[in-house]
Image (cartoon, rainbow, N blue to C red; front, side, top):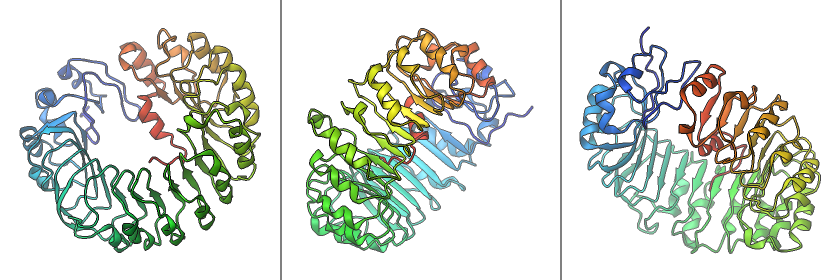
Length: 471
């Protein structure tokens, strides 16, 4: 049987993921692993061993590749052995001094890199570029549809695609008044196709925001931690804004009355909570990270009044709250996140379950929940996160009663002594487990035969976002 090579992801010392219905390999000897005709996907292999352990015949057909790190030598060699690459994650690029070799990939459309000191040239035809901590960035980006520059320093970028759809400049260092992109923030309205804009922790001033006001089709906007921006009146000019991440301080909450939001993420103070009620069409609400406010006796009362005025709400994130068990009954809520709620014990969980009887997903990460609390959960749940909770093998076994459970996160549950596949409910399709090494080969193989995909906690959360916006 030929080795299937449509997708291959390479990153560490043993296989922790497969695709389709193929058998999972757990093998430290890569040459031996690649003799298995059923092997399709590898996850993590360090670059020094990449060309030594993976046959050239395998790499020649690869379309998607993720590496742990990359150097000039390995990138040049990769061009010769994997010419059909379309999607490449180069990982850490501290030893990469030039990206010119990327232009030699004929079909390349997606590139991800971290900590590259010279992102000078990119291939024409790229539609997705994601860089973290890179500097300086320069080149022709005229074909891009998605551009993500997290914590980067921007140099001379000569062209920007007028059809760009998503622009993420969080933590990016540049001056919007003398922009090296060839346009300033006040000219952003020229990007007429832009639907998503994330500018959190950027040096934006009031005069710069005029460009945002001209983006009439903007759907998603994140402007957290822009400390020089204190005039937010421009959002009144955004009739199609549906997803908004509001800043911590200085935001005029009365402006919400001009919007028709579907998703809102905020970290502002409790006195302004009532203004959220001006958004009756809200379907997703995240008001986490308010731990300094939770001693207020009015918090529960204010939130109770708010929820009663949001009939369409189906996703709620109130992580860090101390009074989550006092929330009112809401029959429409389907997804609830109450992570880091250290005061949430089994007795409070019982009240919480009664308040939201129709939940399909519940996240209780780092709550003080025990096996007894799991017995209180609705059997209709489809997604459950009990990572870092006080759950034992017995509690895990009790979840077999949840016949609809599709995803389960048990990362950092230190009281679970082993990950015997027999403990995992038979209906589970996605399992969150950070310490993959604690599971032996036979356990992995048994789970794969059942069709269970094992992911780290972060990846699983991203997969199951349920409409929550990331800042």
